[in-house]
Amino acid sequence: MSNELEFLSRYVAKGKLSRRDFLGRAAALGVSATFANNLLASAARAEGPIKGGHLKAGLQGGESSNVLDPALNLSQVNFNFGKCWGELLVDMKPDGTLENRIAEAIESSPDAKTWTLKIRKGIEFHNGKEVTADDVMATIERHADANSKSAALGILQGIDTMKVDGSEVIITLKDPNADFPYLMADYHLVIQPNGGKDDPNAGISAGPYKVTVNEPGVRYGGEKFANYWQGDKLGHADQIEIVVINDPTARMSALQGGQVHMINRVEPKIVDLLKRAPGVTIQAASGRGFYPFNMFCDTAPFDNNDLRMALKLAMDREEMLDKILRGYGEVGNDMPVNRAYPLFSDDIEQRKFDPEKAAEYYKKSGHSGSILLRTSEVAFPGAVDAAQLYQQSCAKAGIKIEIKREPGDGYWSEVWNKQPFSLSYWGGRPTQDQMYSTAYISSADWNDTRWKRPEFDKMVIAARGELDEAKRKQMYRDIGVMMRDEGGLIVPFFNQYIDATGKGVQGWVSNPNQEMCNGYALAMCWLEA
Image 1 (cartoon, helix red, strand yellow):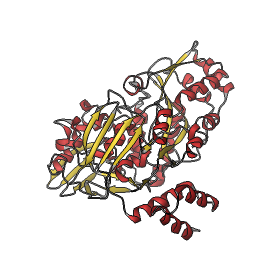
Image 2: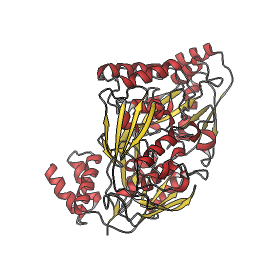
Image 3: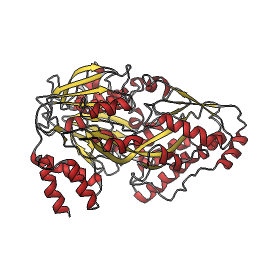
Image 4: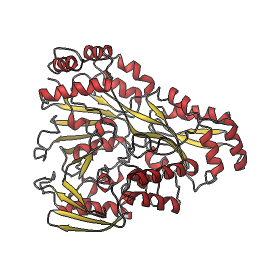
C-alpha cells in the first residue's frame, strides 16, 4: 500500500495525476488525509521546489493597531508575517524536536543552570549587518525588560546573568531549567540588530523575506532576501503577500476565486463545503491550541471561586465540540495543557456538564443578575456561535449570560486582556513550563485571567528545575489540578488548526505546533508551473 501511494504521489508532483484522485485512492486504502498530504508534500519536495512567482495568503487576525515589533505580536497575521521576515535562535519541527537556526548549538551545564548559545557565523541581517552574539544578547535583554511589554517577559524572568564571549552568549539562570532551549523558540524572540532597541518596528531580521509592505490591518508584503543564510531551503516565491481578510466567508471566496493561494482559520462548519470546491485542499493538524473563555480572577464577580466553578460546570463541552468544532478537536478540562504535551497526566478527572451542581455553586456565590461575556468573530472560528451555545447551557443552571459582540478590529487591543470575561485563543507552547510561564504566573504580561497566586508560581518554578522526569510529571499534574479547580480559565476544547490551500500549492507540511505550517507556509510553499 505504501509503495503504491508513494508511486502515485510522484505522478501528482509531475502533474500526471490530480490531487483529488490521489486523495480518493488513499482514502480507499484506509490512509489518513494527514499522512496522504504529507506524502504529497514529500513527493513535491523530491521533484524540487519551483522558484519565482507571487504567493498570497488571506488571513484572519489583523488589526489597524498592529505593529511589526515582535515583542507586541498578538495576532495571527503578525505571527505568520513574522516567520517570513524574522529569524529565531531555534524553532520547533513537526515532530516536536528543536531545529537550530541562528543558534548553531545550545549546551547546558550538568545542573541545567548555565546555558551556552553558540551563534552561527555568516548570517546576515536584511540591512547587510552580520548577526552577532551581541545582537542576540541585546534581543533577549529587551524582551526581558518589563518596560518592553513583551509577551515573552514571563518566560525570561528566570535569567540571572548574561554575557557575551566571542560568538557565544552565556546565560545563567536563577534556578535550573531543563526546558530552556524550548523557551528560545518563542515566536516573539525574533533576533534583530542591537536587539531591536533602536527601532523594533523596522521589520529587520534575517528571515527569507525583506519587508516591502506594511499596511496594518490591510496587507503586508515581502521580497526574497538574496543573502538569506539558508539559501533556497525557504523562500521559493520571489514575492509573498498577506491580505487581511477577517471575514470567514470572504476568506473562503478569495481562495475559491484564486485571489489568494492559502487561508487560515477555516470554520469547522464549512469544512465539508470547502472540501468539494475544485482545487481546494483542507490542511488540518491537531496540536496544543485551545479556545478559552477567560475570567479575571481579581475582578468582581469573577473574584469568587464559587462563581467561577459554577461557570465551569455550566459548560457543555461535548455539545460545544460537536456543534462548534464539528469534531475537529477534543474536549478541554479547564487547564491550558492536553495530551500533546509529553508530561501530561491523562488520569485527571474530566469535568462534565452538570447544571444542577452549577446552580448550587451559583447560589453559594451570592451573585445575582446577568454576566457580561464579550466575543467576536476574530476570537476563534465559531466564537460568536460558541458564546450563544454557552448562554443556552448556562440558562439550564439558572445563570443569565449577556453577550456583547465586539468588532474584529481592535478586539485584541481593546477587549482581550482588558475586559473581565471574554473569548480568546491560544496556540499552545512547546512545553508546559512555557505555557504556564507565558500566561499564568503572577508576573506574566499575558496573564489574561489575572490569576495571581504566589503558591502557584512556586510550584511552576519548582517543576521547571526538577530534572527527574517522573517527579516533574507529578508536579505538573498538581499544577494542572490547581488551575482546573481554582483558576479563571474555562477550556471547552482544544482545536485543530484548519487551514486551506488552493490550486497548485505545493510544499505544505502538516505541523501541530501552530497554524499555517507553524507560520512558515508562505516561506516553504510554492506554486506549480
